Image (cartoon, rainbow, N blue to C red; front, side, top):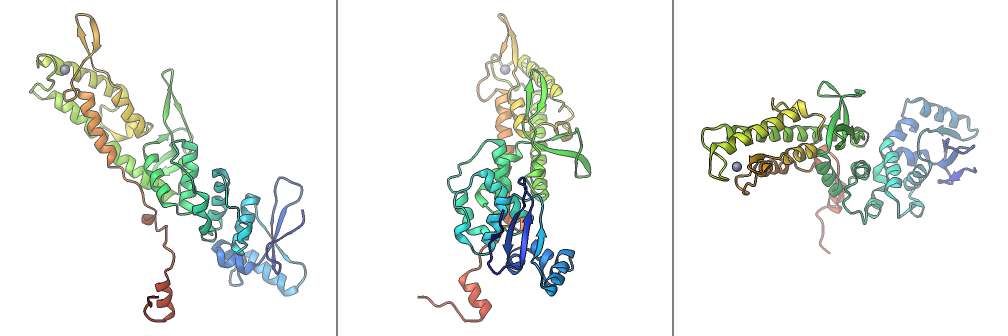
Length: 360
Ligand SMILES: [Zn+2]
């Protein structure tokens, strides 16, 4: 494959091996790369003491063939697009990309810390995105939203994904709060009574600061949920008769208590300890609690009790759980020092000392 001349007067060849027999080679300007990316600056700038930079300088001093900088593991198309953007080759930047392609661009921009060079196209790339509920898409979009500062998408996704985080304890990989935990997000699907992981590692898509903030929200919500469970049990344990269905006898309260106790016991939450439900997502936990059926023995046998809205213990519990879930707030890029606003005309005026802005 012939060299691709991105900068006709380039001084460096970026070489990337890929599946073909020949590497992809791009002729670029080291100045453009160093200006756009601190990672390339560390590699190539004259003031850098990195081995690549030192060898570039000694190479130039001798003045023979161009210095070749080998890269590895980058997507060649995404790298080509980003390198062109760094050289203001606007027409070489695609206007339409799929989520998968945008993911590749995000990986390259994240690696070389140069998302700003493609900033102007981000709105175009995510144009037409509708809210996705597909987990794999959500995870990719979370990474894209983080790298390219897509605020609305980031807020929507962090909020949606908090309810899906659960932990697997097999093959421990990461440390969270001093404990070994593999960060997994997804619903635990019940398959004929057997728990099955619907796994994907959130940590691969969310930077650790974001993941930690999401885990913290999850933990607060789990504690809130357990408080609601305990309060429900306490309510039916008081001497006053709670249930007003049928003839307001204690009988119903006893039945409710027994069913709740049994259900909580089976879910492992009778100690109201949040670590006991580490392997359940909030979504799953709330669903399991909502699925509790209170049954009564009647002359026709056991059947689900017909409680009115106000005295149905599960419905009342669900209302309180909804309040807890509502307290989960979307995370904002700003709070992670991201989404820096573009410099205004006035800031430039101040920087250049050209006085107050004149109205035209
Ligand atoms: Zn009742």
